[in-house]
Amino acid sequence: PSPPQEYRILALYRFVPLVTPANESNDTNNKYENDSSPETQWDSSALMAHPEQHPTLKRLRSELYETLRPWGAKGTLLIAPEGINGTICYPFPPPAGVRGGRDAVATAAASSGGTEDEGEGNFDPVSEYLKHHELFGGPELRTRTSVWNEDSESDDEVQVGNEHCTALKEMKHPRPAFQRLKIKIKAEIVTLGLGRPLEHRRQKLKLPTSEEDATVISDSKESIRQNMVEDANIDSTQPRGQILEQTSTLTDRHLQNQKANPLKTKGQYLTPSQWDEACRNPNVVVIDTRNTYEVEIGTFESALDPKTETFAEFPKYLETLANEYDWSLYGKRMDDDGKTLDNDNERTSTDDEEREEEDGDNRREKKKKAPPEAIAMFCTGGIRCEKATSFALQSKFFPEDLPIYHLEGGILAYLDHVAKRNEANVEAASQRESHGNHTAQQDESNA
Image 1 (cartoon, rainbow, N blue to C red):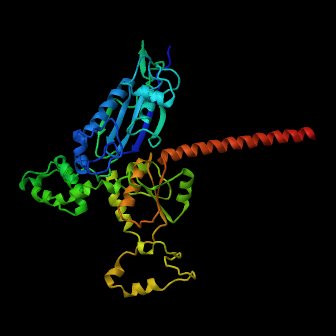
Image 2: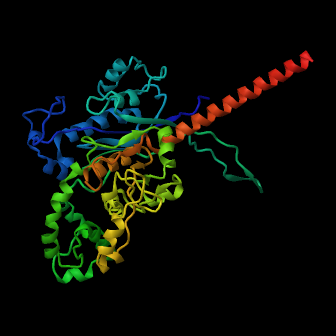
Image 3: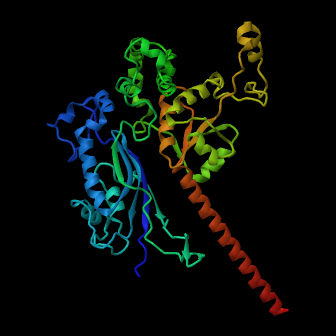
């Protein structure tokens, strides 16, 4: 019997401008955009409001469907003006007789030096197509490939005559990790909540149509509305008309996606070895950018837990965290008691004198902490902390020269590094033991 079909899982992401708004410079030229086409009239506001209607993104989605479906790919890909993100599962080697859509795979094969022959060699048509795509391919496309080997073996009990026995395991073809292929057009490939304007999300809130209806909103809708306006301290129990009037001022904030734009700036990468050093440094604040349920699974010992339910809550957490520090002391040397030191390494009396001059209210305020030397963030695969560091740098919450780092490749890359390091240590120990035994044998023979 033929061996069961195996599957590969490919996770990928890249922040790259798939489309360029009309009010921004465009130095690229590709087959997806035409200067005479309607998309050239889209400014950044319209693009963030209705990305699913942009012709370039719609054509890209159609091409991805046409190319990936024949190869049996299943999973979810998100495409947005800022890039691509997602995870797919597909049979590998490809089943005999299956060929991808258009000439996209053949082009990828030629560019990589591989072969497009069906099922032959190690050529991966899906991976090569994505890695060499005109819009988002290249060395900046971050990918991670693993083998999916879940099968549907059966241990069910069956009745034979008057006795029950366990059925022999029947090896079936493994099942793909996902049920179908979904390619979605979004405002952001990882949602930080700063993209789509609020006015275009009101329809989802189903706000009441009259003042009387405002008193009968369900708890779930009330919660959604509160999350949308909490930054402006707007009373979500107000009638619809008053809420819309006050929330209209929030539209600009939700349009300012440049506050979290890794295409403009982002934190500095740390390798796993450098990350270990950062975690051991008590003057570096390590932040886990993942959500609560992920943090509960496991995190770094020194990491702060933002206690967020969604990534969209992270900007508010970061602002709260920044307010806990006295940034006027940033760059100054401090002693163990939090006092500044002058050039002679002696305590200055400035802090004590200023405290005596403060009024009673200020003295009752919680004392702020001495600022850190740097901030380091991490997530699962790298995409969230890449956007989180970008927001931290562009939000102006922190001093401009404060180093902000993030773990390259996230926890997954870190675990790969640890596994290789442990494997190397075991091999080295084995070699030392073997060398020791060999030396002992020589000594015995000489004796």
